[in-house]
Length: 362
Ligand code: NAP
Ligand code: ZN
Image 1: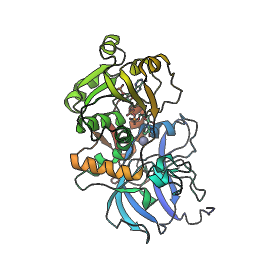
Image 2: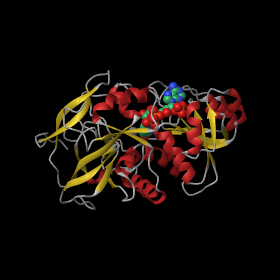
Image 3: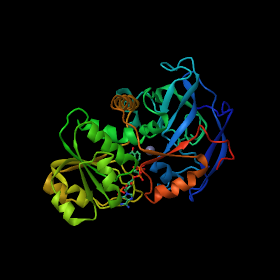
Image 4: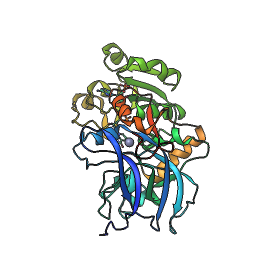
């Protein structure tokens, strides 16, 4: 696979963090020429996932600076390689976290590329050719067609962008636990942020009773009225937690910071499952007793495969499901990062890349 980066001849304007302050500034870099299996995408919108903030600040100790974050990308195809099947110029498309995988292992062969040991993320990965991948906080992307999905015509491109990560990350565990087509279960969603609000929307669209478990009393009214949540538990309120003990079949934990698992596990019925998708930088403490006394399971997962991402988008098209977003200009990414860190977003910032002036726009 050894290649050189000599075909990285296209100059692209974007926005990068350069150290663990996480501060974003304009950044010009190179992308590869469009290869035979590639498509080139003019980026219109890019969501700001909490993972972007973790990476920009090197919370996980794996950041390669400068980093161009962004894995909730929507845009229009401007170039198509001769072998890039199923795409044409002008198509409305999306790209999420994945930029490549080995295409040969048992996970790649069963549409679970997200578990390939050789997967390459759309940013902060060392690509096959030795280059570091740069993400969607930029005006153009070259990507292999096998990691590109179509955005249904009825979905707006800005509010669809976060589906590419937040959407698929919560859709996958619901599907995996037979919660997409078997209604009537009681599910819990811990943390009402970008991922959490999509989990509530999916949970309701799929016919479940949905309980939000949150640290933010201010989110209760809108969770119920706008997102359709049935119940709302404040995770610091012992009476509410006690009243809901052993009531839930399945709980999805989307929290980005350290938090106690014990009260969450106790909300599960006997045999219930806690599925963790939130990725705090510090290890979570795992209490044994609620597992033992409730025969409960705890597991986790990362995003979903590409085929399932397309399936999720089609479901969203059918049910008209999009994300609740706050559209921002590229020159306010730093403010958005600060507000995201303070849990002050309803529920996803999306950068208006299409209307950004070039490198001066920060
Ligand atoms: P987000 O929009 O910031 O939402 C996280 C929510 O967690 C907040 O809205 C808040 O909800 C709750 N929260 C925050 N700090 C908390 C604390 N100290 N204690 C308890 N609750 C707290 O973030 P996001 O974009 O949804 O991402 C959530 C996490 O998932 C991040 O760690 C991200 O890196 C990770 N992630 C994982 C995957 C994957 O594939 N597994 C994919 C995408 C993102 P309340 O106000 O309701 O308490
Ligand atoms: Zn993400």
